Each structure stands twice: as C-alpha cells, then as structure tokens.
Amino acid sequence: MASLFGKWPNEVSLLEPGAGIGSLVCAFAKRAQQENPNANVKITAYEIEPSLLEHLSRHLNELKSDRVETTIHCRDFVREASFASAFNPKRFTHVILNPPYRKIGANAEYRKILRSIGVEAGNLYTAFLALAVALTSDGGEIVAIVPRSFCNGSYFRPFRKWLLDHVSIEQIHVFESRNKAFRDDNVLQENIIVHLVRKGKQGPVVISTSDGKTFGDYLTKTLPFGQIVKADDFEQFIHVPTFEASTKLGDHTLAELGLDVATGPVVDFRLKEHLLAAPEAQSVPLLYSHHFLGGELRWPRDHKKPNAMRVNDVTRKWLMPRGWYTITKRFSAKEEKRRIVAHVVDPERLPFEFYGFENHLNVIHSKKSGIAPDLARGLALFLNSTIVDQHFRNFSGHTQVNATDLRSMKFPGKAALMQSGKWAAKHPILRQDEIDAFVEDFYGKQATTN
Image 1 (cartoon, rainbow, N blue to C red):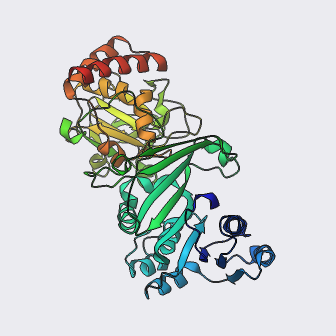
Image 2 (image 1 turned 30 degrees about the horizontal axis):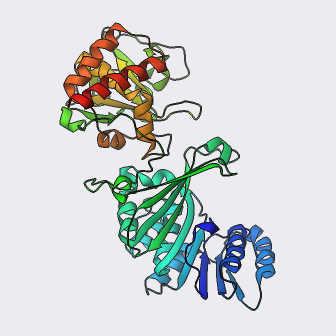
Image 3 (image 1 turned 120 degrees about the vertical axis):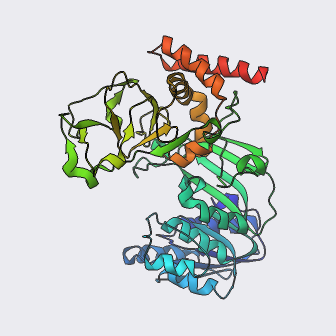
C-alpha cells in the first residue's frame, strides 16, 4: 500500500484514520524516507480503541526524528472529520487507511452527520473513505484497503457518485483468493486496495492482481477508464476486469427482453404462522435455495426450513402464479466455483396454482408471471456458464448476487436464448465443461454472425 503513492514532496502531511497499532503508518514513513530523504513528514493518526493506543504510541515514538512529527488523537474520527471538512481544510497530502467495516443504521447519528456534509454512507468503511477524501488537498493521494462491495449495487450508488465526483482512480488491486489473503477474517467478499487522487485528472486505470497476502503471481494491466466505469451506466458500477472475456455476453438487458427480476417476495420470519413443514390442503410450495440441488428441483425436502405456505388473504400477495421461471441464488457459498447459480422452475414438477419464492432467491419473470419454457432453460444455461461468471466477477466481488446486478447485465437476444433452451431441454444433465463448451461455441458463432 505504501508503494502505491506516486508523489513525495518535501512537505508531507499524512492522515491515518483508525490507525490500529500503526502498521500502515510505519510502512508509509519508511517508504517516505526511501523516496525523499529530505522530506519533512507530519503524521496524524486517529485511534479510538484504548487497548491499541499503547502499541500505537510506542510505534509512532520510534518514528520520531528531526524530520518526522507524530500526533495521535484518541477521538471519534467520523464526528471530528465531519466537523473539520465543513470548513474545507484539505490539509493532508497523503492518506493511508484500513477502515472499520460495520453498517450504519438508516437513522443513526453518523448518517445524519455525514448527510450534513453531502455524504451518503451506509457503512463505516465508506464513511471513513469519504471523510479521508474530504480532508485531502487537491492533488493529494489516498490509498485504502476496503471491501469491494461499494463497486456495485444500488445501495452504494450515492457513495459511488460522490466518490467519482471527487477523485480519479489510479489503481485497483484485487486479491484473487479470499481464503488465502484473509483466511482468519471469514470474509464474504473480496477486499481491494484502491489508489485515488483528490481532484485528479482521470486517465487509464491500473488493474493489478495477486494470489494471497504474499502478493505472489503479481500481475498488472492498464485499461481505459471507460472499461472501469461505463459512460452510459446510470448505476456507475465500478468494474474491475481481472478476467479476459473471450465471448461477448450480448447486447440486451432483461428489460429489453421483456423480462424483469425480483428478489423472492417471501420473508419467512414475517409469515411464520402461515408456513408448513409439509404440504397440505390449501397450501402451495415455498421454495428455498436448498430445494435446488445438483441442477434439479427437489421438493418437498426433509429440512429444518418449511416446505409449504398456506394460501389465504395474508399470504396471497406474496405468491407468484404457476409457470416457468429462471431463479438464481442470491448468496453463493465460498466453496462454490460460480457466483451465479441458476435453476429452472418447471411447472410440470410443481402442479400448484401458486409458488412462494423465499427471499434468498432471485426470480426472473415477465410481469410477475412465468416465461416461455425454452427461454427459462436458455437463461439458466447461459447464467450457469463460466464466461458469465467471469463477467460478473469483473464488477462484483461479493458472494451476493443482487436483482440490480442481474438487471444491469447484458444478455443475448431472445431468439438465441430460446434456441439454446431447446438444446438444454434435450440435455437435462450437463457437466460444467459441457455447459461452457456449448455457450462458447453457440454464442461465439452468434457474435460472429451478428
């Protein structure tokens, strides 16, 4: 992280919010002395955790010299930085940070404080990063290690817009393996290192990757900014193209195909009194992720979760009519090879008037009803391919697949999807390599023809 900074003036003012025991500060100070031995370095560190202050103080005292000055604040960084940024000080030339990760409630005091300075942040890490940018002088540099979740999803859209209005992105580093880099942290998403410049002129972006925390197999490539943030993308997703896509996905959104995707409407704990362990009269299937195993539907299933839901005036509005649907799991397990795991709901297997889809599923539908059988099969086949998984990983580092992500994806045309669905109907059980071979060949030919 310290090596990513590109400017080493004679007067350096470093901020580290949430300094911990001072590991990043010490790395930065060492780097600064190597890059510019004549630099005067002023370090301002914030740390609110008392148990860490003794270690931080000792490490910073070891840095002190005629050219290195250190200050520690045991105060709330969010409150103090929000107040300071209102007066537009921009006094730091460099910021390095590994912020805390914790959600901020919609009505929490931090939300109100941040909104007062024009920042919408629903997580402490985005709050820390935004405030770090706000306190950095124009042309100053920020290097942070943060979750990748802010790069996509509607939840982080206001923060992305704010960030992209205030900084240029110089480099994004991705750890290819979550298990190796953060094996002790039980992370559900990728962490990335970002190098930003306050009010910098946006140019090409360096994308780097490494295998784990030792930075083995370190690779870099430089890409136009237009490949990172698409010019016509309302969501302003930040793509991190670590995979080379050999096949074009398509040119159509789900909306352009006459489709939409919904998060499963049934939130089970809110309808607990209407749920059943086994189906009975006046009930319909309630489908969870565990009902889809090995590429096929297994319902009902012996499980701690219910299998059915009573149909009545309370539950009817949460149900969807019988039909063909393509569903994806919203959450993939760490050990799963693909982020997007898709299945088909075949009404011949579920002869009921309605279905309940639990909240951990995404349901592709047409006007809240089923879709053509071949289209459902074609969509599932396409979504289960490795090439689609690679495209998805280029803009999402989380195990969660949101409905918004699927709406933003590009798909082949309806005719091509239905043609591939006809093929899938004749091959109900497929290995991953068979799916990939068909998709690469079929859609590769489609792209060439078009």
